[in-house]
Length: 126
Length: 185
Image (cartoon, rainbow over all chains, first blue to last red; front, top):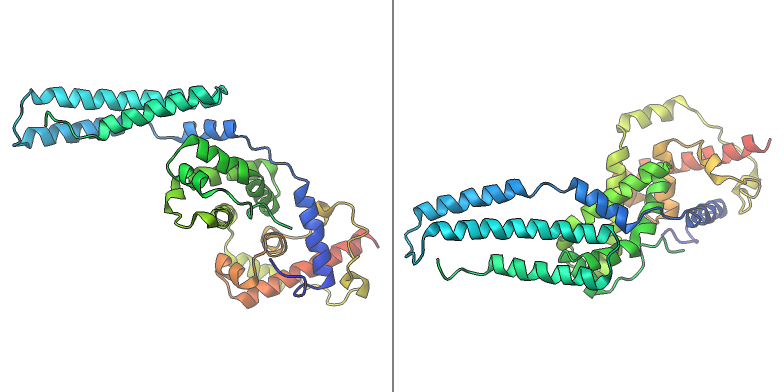
């Protein structure tokens, strides 16, 4: 911030008036509006889920690792979990938009964390 | 006077926001949204545009927050992001300002009273006085006097020499002083 010993008296007066003027401007922003805008600008998840599924199918088709169960059982599980994750994200967004209480929101976040860990954990069947 | 970006946000909250936790992001938002909005309004003067740009700043902030290493500097980091966003939105080619300077000679002399601390005492509406400035001049005045950037920093923002920033800033002050004369003949 330009210190007062650097500014002329006229500049100091202008600075003070501008700061006073700025301080009177309330912010119209709300968290709910921001969440609404974020959810509108968020890219659809489904294309990513499809791309991930295709990549997994290609990987499984070239995999030489021993398979104790039919390989097709892992891919639908991964796809289903990603769809669950997307649905859960939508529920979280809706909870914020309708002003859900903290307990409900925390519960949803905890579910999301468990689901994320389940997706990321290595699968013994592979 | 603090512009609001100096508010301290607990490092744990910043980390929650960096992890994408909505509770952390919300606290981050609630702490700084007023400062961001006032900065945007000061630069663009349009409440609706200021609101849109402010939301854009937070969306970008949540996407980039992981890049922030020093959580204690989150206010300054957000302020830089906000200024970048505003200037990118409102940027005009520099050559337009060069033409403005050569075509609008300003009176070099004015009453000594306008150099005093009470030169604005007859001005009720500071916003109306600011109308005499173009967008770039207002940005310079606002960023220098209200947001605390120095001329060298502004020179980097606008990609011009610091001497040019000083010249334009002092020209803006002269225009404001002439505005006071015209408002109170």
